[in-house]
Amino acid sequence: MDLMNRILIICVIGILFCIPLAPVTNTLDIDFDSTFKTNIITQINGDGNTLYVGGSGPDNYTRIQDAIDNASSGNTVFVYDDSSPYQGNITIDKFINLIGENRDTTIIQDGNWQKVIEIQANKVYISGFTIRNGGRQDTFALIRIHSNATVIARNRLELGKCGVYLRYGHNALITYNSISKCDYGIFNSFSNYTDITNNYIENNDFGIEISHSNHTEIINNTIYDNDNGIFLDESNNNIVQGNTINSTQVHSLFLFSSNHNEIRDNNILSSQWGILVDNALTYGGFNLISYNHISNTEEYAIHIGWSIGNKIIGNQLSHNHIGIYLVSSLSARITQNNFIQNTQHATFEDFILFGLLPLNLWNNNYWGRPHILPKPIAGKLVPIGFLWLKFDLRPRLLPHDWWLNE
Image 1 (tube, one colour):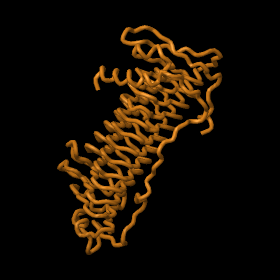
Image 2 (cartoon, rainbow, N blue to C red; image 1 turned 60 degrees about the horizontal axis):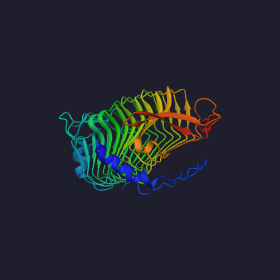
Image 3 (cartoon, rainbow, N blue to C red; image 1 turned 180 degrees about the vertical axis):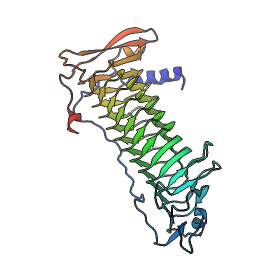
Image 4 (cartoon, rainbow, N blue to C red; image 1 turned 120 degrees about the vertical axis):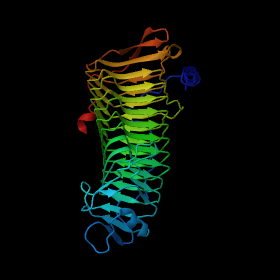
């Protein structure tokens, strides 16, 4: 979207906000849709028949693909580690459980740099493998999923274009995996109701990307030393909660053209950027950024650009270059945050038409020391560059203590 189109949209919607903002209370008036997965497989199941690969049994298979081809829906294919590494380029076209004997020693790889495992059937369960050396073409992955209700659990995935690539695959669960040295750790595209939980994602270009996908839950993951942590692209009604995002080289959490997402209780530290929201222009489709700990970012802890109606509530922002930076943002509510020992706690750049109007609300924040009088917030009006002030009319005397009781 070019600059003039952005300004036009902001102008039209800004007119709707030229009314007094409602008073702030300590209760978040948020009513997110809390639809949860109900049909996902959470444990190995099937009809009890097991086919074996490797090992010393007289009827055991030597190739994983041969065992899959001879299995029936509901069977388990169990793979011993003594014949590792096994050849990849595996296709799963029926509902089975594919189980490795030991995650660290049961290895599937593809020396020809093709896809390692492709899942075409619903309700497939894969656990207990090291899966590595996948293809580097755009649609290749260590595990590529085009089906529903897939479970990927307790695997080690490394050295591929994508660790896990979902496209038009819904209701998947990706949990307790280690994913490293890929272009994308997890790439979730046009796939709804994915749960991504308790994974360790390290040293990828992108840790997790969610593209054109809704109702994803990204919970309790450790995302360490990636170029980018979590990226939501044109994706709505997602929850990002309880993650630790450490040492990202660019953005820890980036929302582009994404609305009505809930970003809460995350710990973001020692990164270039913290949380960036850009081009979220849907009226009434705000993002809620609440109760996150963001510290030691080199640029901004929270940056909201060209967006409408975002709520920044109850965050702990400490030792950052800038705590909060708003650029042409309308109807943002910045309340109950703690700003502690940042080089600059907050600033803004407003398009001149809106800089003169109180379209963003700063209220009841703690600004590093007690304030009795309204706290001025310095910024500027663009494109002319005039210095301007906004005010937190009711600054906090003492830090909010919500984070002490966690």
